[in-house]
Image 1: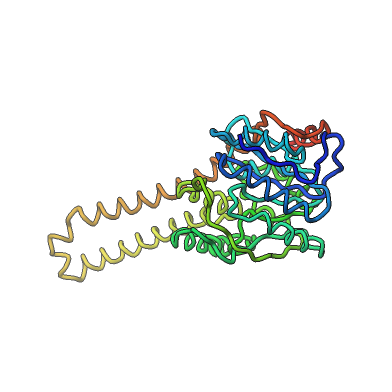
Image 2: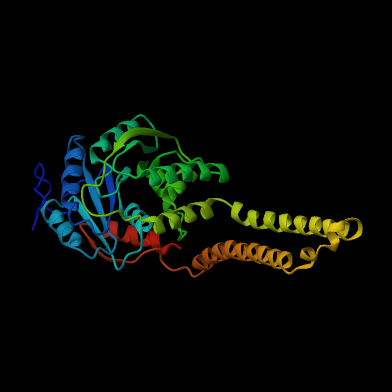
Length: 345
């Protein structure tokens, strides 16, 4: 078993640890190859600051040895703490849970796949010390990503900025630092279909960006294939925009206008044009095409409405956002604080 070496004689017991100034929240899903190195590099980066910290790993239903290695990391350094979900609840809810349990004055959200280098964290903290309450990391370079993913990501950011009331930083992901007041504000938002990078902008506060070079994945596979990327984009759009519902209305008016125009054209042709004598004019093709077109518009409109109704249905059920099966390294006060946040729906 790969074991995380203890760094600079970390405190021997949880009770003896001073309150952390910094909390690093990292979702983990099937990252057995990288989770130990992630803990090592993150702890090393935070050690340079000379202030107490905690690393909150959120096990999002991993099916490999990730949880075992996370426990080994905690045994070597109690500042590594573990939240383990009862099943896979998803990346955005893992971020939410980690932020709920984190106690630092500044909370850094970062993925555990090491594409976002932990060595950038001190740079984010330096901007926080300058008075910024949200410091997001902007991907200046994106190693190892296909042109398709880069192009679609760029298109998504620009689209959502055009159709929503939030101004998302272009090329900024979930890797960001948030002040305690920002985390507390986000803790009051308990919607299920969460788009955390949008919510952190929606709550406001003074923000800035820090450019960095995003690395290629060293091992393992991406946790965001095309299907999940599309769902993620849909969650972001429906969380902050009514435009899809308005499009259904616009399409209805558009079809109605085309229908009226078609009626006028047909009447004119029948009365004044020799085309009215053309047998092709009386065929079923035009009727069938018009029927299929109207039916398609109706189905699209119903689908758009269904997406919003489904989200309303999820909210009115008032189920918890996530279920923590085990919390390791947290004292009783931290446990109660985290549980109360998700119980306050």
